Image 1 (cartoon, helix red, strand yellow):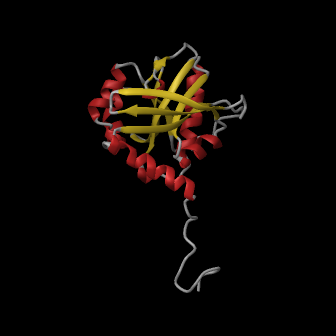
Image 2 (image 1 turned 90 degrees about the vertical axis):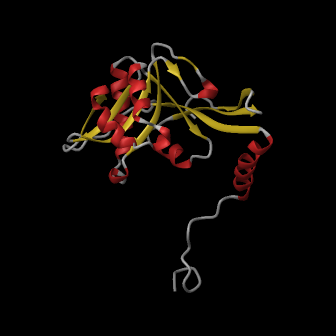
Length: 215
């Protein structure tokens, strides 16, 4: 008998709150009538003081280049539509890729844009002290080794070395794992917003909550 339950039954994960279940169900059904709601959170990363996480001796980090395209393509393997051609295009558009290597194999990588926030609802040009962080990914074989926060922490240092002290990113409102990951690194929420799109033609973004500095 399992503790605290009936014979043959494990406790399992906690149930999804009814309110969250209803909202997610509504967001899934609205596109059928031409209405799309996309709630997300704007975040400033790298605001916590302290030393970056320590890199194991067997690994190295740094800025990848187009010469590393084979290793980067092997890392993403088409995940979220990230094709080889798209990776090449990013380099040629001036985007930077910060990676973690084990020998010649890229175990994890994240992208940085120095000119534009390409997140559609919040698209704008970046100031000289800003950088937009996006598309962090860890190879399945390397998960469970704390590589995601390690890579992000060291990426902050590399961005600061370029004078990019304001590091911005965006997270789907219901992506709890991403929220936890960024919170552990001392990220600060800036605001919660909702992008409303009607019939694929009309679109507006509304900020529904702003956080006080330090929240």
